Structures are given as C-alpha cells and as structure tokens.
Length: 79
Image 1 (tube, rainbow, N blue to C red):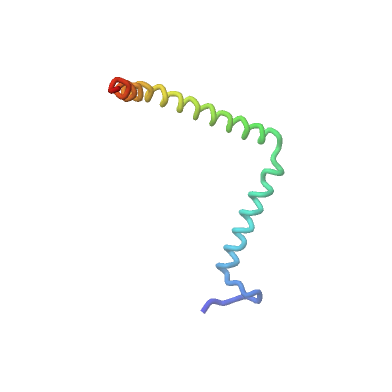
Image 2 (cartoon, one colour):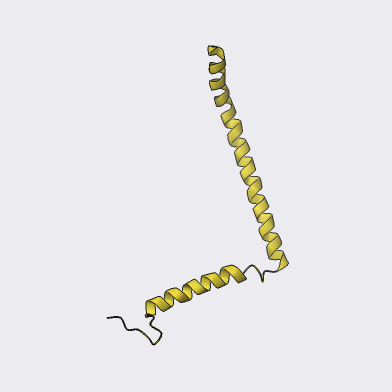
C-alpha cells in the first residue's frame, strides 16, 4: 500500500506535480526575462530558417519542373 502524506499525495504524484509546475513556470516566464540580444538572435535564426526552407523549395521545384512538363506535354499532345 502506498504511503500518503497529510495532503493525500504520494511521492510519485508530488514529483509529477512539481515537474508540471516547473514546465509551466519555465515556459511562461522564460521569455519574459530574456535580454534584447537573445530576442534578436531568435528572430535572426528564425529568418535564416525561412531562407533555407525557401532555397530548398526552389531547388526541389527546379528539379521537378522538367518532369512535370513532360507529363503536361503528353496531355496536351493527346488532344
């Protein structure tokens, strides 16, 4: 039988509750206390991520365009 403390929580439940409280505390208050350079860094890194995604999408589109054109030509030539 699990030993309960005066508040009715077992040790495992206390650990889970404290972990959940810590996660909520860190996620809500961590960004509020960030210095300006950290916010600027996050903004710049997010911009770089968008740029890299755009370049990768453009390369994929360039590689797929000839394949798509071959299929489109066949459809056009059937008519």
